[in-house]
Length: 479
Image (cartoon, rainbow, N blue to C red; front, side, top):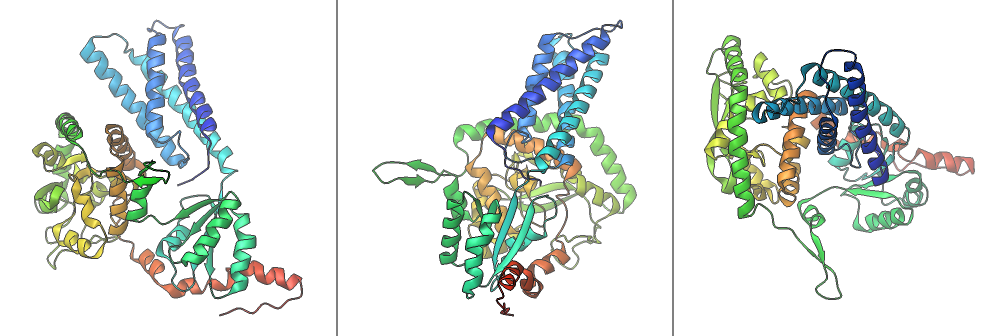
């Protein structure tokens, strides 16, 4: 993801331009329509459309400190336009209001979407010139998997440098503290760097006004969402309660029922087509059931469209891998678009699941995770969901230790607004995010083989050698 540091003032001006684009589109269409016999729309329609657009853009993080990829932005704009058209049709049908003029509406959304896309491309290009640089500080003795994952990531344009550190080499440590940190905007400190060096790097970065990043674990993530209290003259941090209160559970349940019933009514033709395609593609049933855990580790049968061959687990239960040969042709498409999960709306109506919540795990894998992953059972404080924070921002191959952090983030920040936001992000995910990708074996090997990182160690501190050669000092590598 393309990440840029943006101020609140900049975000405010960007929102003003977005609003101006929508209003200008209304004015332009009204001007064009004025020369035709077609009806025009007034300021009420323009203002409501502008307000709804800015709200949905806010849901898609257009006005946060993260500038998303161009593909995500364009998709978000198109989804926003589609949602607003559908909403306008429903409002006009059920209220009898005569604000829906087909020609005007189509032209309006075409112009608004086109101008918004052009504006987003322009502002992204401008911000891209000022992208921040990142220094990843990792240990040569025990390289961090997360640090290496950040280095291998190629879905952003940040200027990133991966630096392996030998803590026994005083010259390297001194060069890191006195030279390298000053050259970068953000410093990521590996969890395998010693507490002493971590403290030295942190102090240096703070004095130089550099942003710092560290790996999230359950404990520090929980404290991040805590509140500062001053019961005495010594401040304390009060951790948030995880999970929903009674009022929130009632509201969430009503919302789940209403939305699930409406969605089933709307998508029933799509589900019928999918069922026919599955039968034509491979022998076997259209649906399949599988045991999963939900709140309090209660077991239920989840419903999904079948995406694998009938005897996919004849050799026992196993996690999906990238390019899994057990997946059918139709199943591959269903997984990439997440359409295989549509029957889970029945689970939501039955009360087994919610629309948004921690993803349900199979007991055979969940029990193993609970034994090996710290605090993994915290995810069973809430009902399982069709989508959720870990579903939107993670992958099927995301490690269990990372998923529990994401589930913790969701539970500590739950709100009705947050659920709506995650559902909108899920819609976009169908078009731009392959969350169904399985475990990439090659990537796992690259992240787990330490020797591949040691090969790069010789160039980690190349600047030291060059700087000392200029002074006539010989540099001897420790390798």
